[in-house]
Image (cartoon, rainbow, N blue to C red):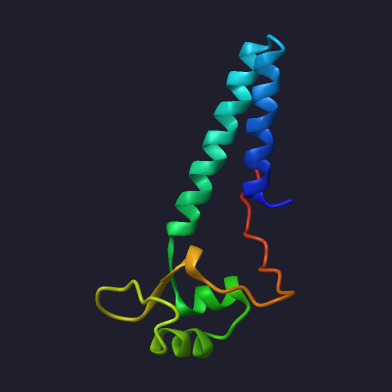
Length: 105
């Protein structure tokens, strides 16, 4: 299940809760779905350096630079080194990006 699937699932569950009279629980679950959806949109709009994009996509920075040159991937940097939007990245089949570091405590 993807995070987008989870958002849809939470919204559907919130609708069922609302129909069953659990209005407070429905509002809470709907609010959680909205927050996760907003975080996903913001994450997709993040621009990455080619090195960061390579780690996220599984493709090399050189390959991503080649895609930019072909016009298949848009360079979002106004000046300086290339930057690409996370949501625009191709994903190498079978590649799982490394898990982000989490703060403990």
